[in-house]
Image (tube, rainbow, N blue to C red; front, side, top):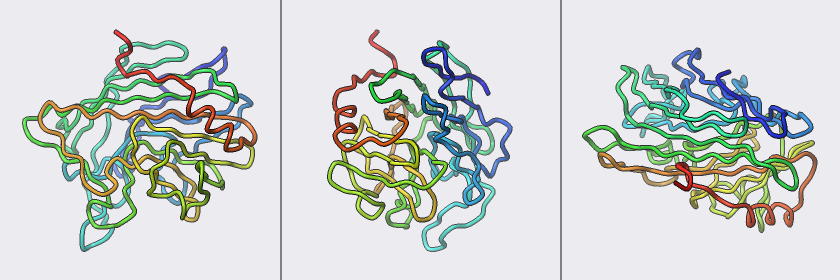
Length: 276
């Protein structure tokens, strides 16, 4: 554990750097456990079905041809292939550490250690009417002298599998819903201002700063993400910056659509670098 997030004196999330993980799991910083205010854990790490799923994290399966997600790599015409092509996302240090705020510097690296992307990340824990809010902002900069391509299995030929970006592995079964739809088939790979996950004793509500399509799984495993490259790869020119943000309401018990919408529409946003 390299840090934690607190609210009102209580630890609501632990932050790990993932540095001790084997290469095939896509080592990277991740939040786990994330807990409700009553102490219920709402993340899972290294589950048996997908051991490279690490709580809540930011990663991509194809960064300039390298796998920074973990597990097998999807190749066009071949499907999933086990390869020694795993990079890692390295924690460089914190610019600021407060009980409810972390400002971090990271490098996204190829297997040989060369830097593909430089990242600045903000993580905050904030009070909310129905629980607490996790606010995460990331800025990815291309520090190389060439274009960097960020793709996914979807951009490499597997339609509907645009995972990569923010991803939350949940600990158990639940039901996803938006303002006008419910269930995996109806909400997956679609854009919506917010998406909620109703678990057995908790509710999470996700809202993105950008309109990326949601990635949702219930049948194979429980997970929610925002697809960074759902249909076409993202290409960053030298020096270009890609910004993404996600806010998550973490609540005990059940919330209805009205409560989810009220939170998603009224909470303020803040940029990674603050107001200065």
